[in-house]
Length: 455
Image (cartoon, rainbow, N blue to C red; front, side, top):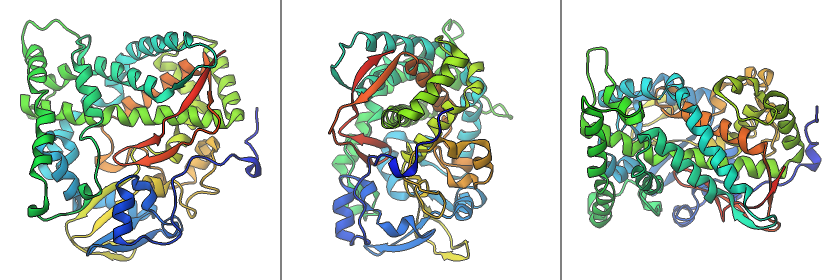
């Protein structure tokens, strides 16, 4: 078995700028407009709770696992969706679970959970395998030495597979998914500031609403088809949402289904895609890990594509994925508005504050992880995992508001890596600068440019 690479020879991985001291409010706004990861100064990676003020807004960065448990689990109802984020997306996502709280959110979440749990997604494995093999066939035709943007190819795969998951063979939905994955377009630092009504842009609000409303006729038609007694299609996500029932017979209306589909489309592709991209970057940077993964795949699969039962026999594959999501978490920052005063790790968090739980910070915190900027999949071996708080690793958040589609995302990434790693090596283009860039997801700024080497 290949040993872990010695620390003193570990490569320097892609990082955003990290200021040595806290930024002023003006510097923060200017920097956040291009990369929200670059606003975090060195102190937040050393201290478990950090309080700051920006433009009279109290901001509390919570990285202590016990504090995270308090915010995301024990008293989660007190920490609501950030008002600025809700205001930005409300015109488009309406009743979707991403932007709602309270009983309304609980009702939707209880109906969605069975639709998106692991057992519900396993029947989609053959489809996920089929389309990943199709991408592999496409990559095999790339001339040796030709440079490609790997994320672009993986984006096509993610869109097609998620489209099949949503609506079976009805390909009209693919354009909607591709557009909603990037919704609502270019982010602004002011999107996350609680501006007064008179400073908000009605033109931007109208544009956001119009972007979502253009898909209403398509979704209404697809939903109506699945409500019809004559429907003869498959049990795709839209069909499952139509069929979903609560204990009292409650069900989602057509408008609520439409909002949830738009909500899932907004995060379902980008979140998975980002993890896919960073995995190949890290494997290319660490040949010893690639070799160990190759050995495991060869021993278990012997060159064939995996099925759902195989995945439990590929522990190193899962460790590589989890370590990738530690270093480059798909959702780098979560914001919560504090509804009432609370005590977190002995500190008072006052009403009206913004609580920040940032996987980008938590996953690289010097008091939670040894040598946190180094790639080491063994951090996720059973022994090390058991010795660590579960709230030190938040790839899909935690608690009642954890990502509802986490099972599907993890399944898709495992299958994709298992198939493509047996057929190719991806080699990074020398001297191409990659900068982790964050807003709602963490993307590789500049793309990941590679050449493809068939095995």
